[in-house]
Length: 279
Image (cartoon, rainbow, N blue to C red):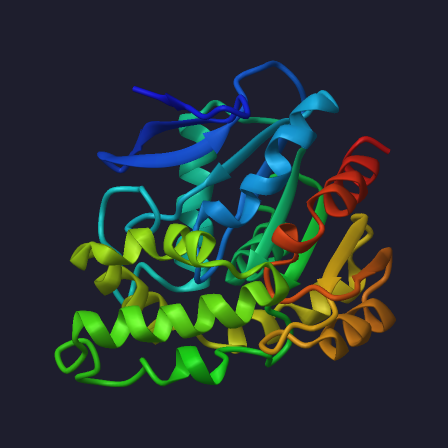
């Protein structure tokens, strides 16, 4: 079953591990661009999907298990970056995606994307990171507060929704409107998704990106960093360090944009991704 939006973007699903994995796409032939989210959901990629498709690409923005509109529920074990990278491989297999694949990651999705590249879990042809976690930049304090034993049992629905509203509002920055905030918050009104998100927060660990650095420094895969300069969580200094240390990397800075710059500058970011993925 699929749902078509007025922009031509379709929400549909495929079975992974016996559960429905929901994703946004434009159903057409073309080179696949796999788009990964982090502590949010596939909504972060919606503003650029139609533009990528018009350029002849086949964008696929998946909701990780238990998050967004995907079924299932994450645990501390299945919410780690390596475990989620393994799940993404199974998702790609379910869609029969094979051969060199372009990958983009936002937030923790960027850590998953880096893991896929370094460990050759997918044949990543080009890697784009948008306000991604890198080095020891995570978990950010607003996520780290949900870590630790007993947190899930002592956390109410209001606790999560209030914290997520504050984080989404800050992440959207100048693009924040009540309608957009409510749209982003919608999945967290479901208890299963709230529990999955707490597991994701609890499993966040910067060693999963720090351990990748030696291999990233040896990597010859083309890499593009797109960064909202006003991000209060993944600050632009991390992007500057990454581009100075990791070869074959280019940084595009997005002024007056926060942690979800696709909402602030969708045309500019889509054009940068199109140029990069079609080079």
